[in-house]
Length: 86
Image: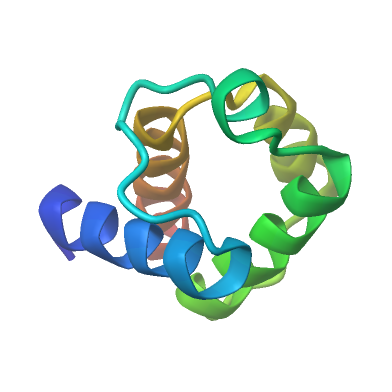
């Protein structure tokens, strides 16, 4: 899957699950869209479905630094690479 496809999927998740349409890829989700810790947990669940993989505690901790859509896409690219490296 290309990064562009991941961006499209993530934007779709934000539209369907969080009712956030067309967020800027570098918007601080917490400041601009009031994205909170509950939303972050829901997002991790969506990422698990998306990757068809249960995230480890370590992988979930790495998500704590996510602030933007670009961060989310980078995170998914890394997780997908790790999954295929298994």
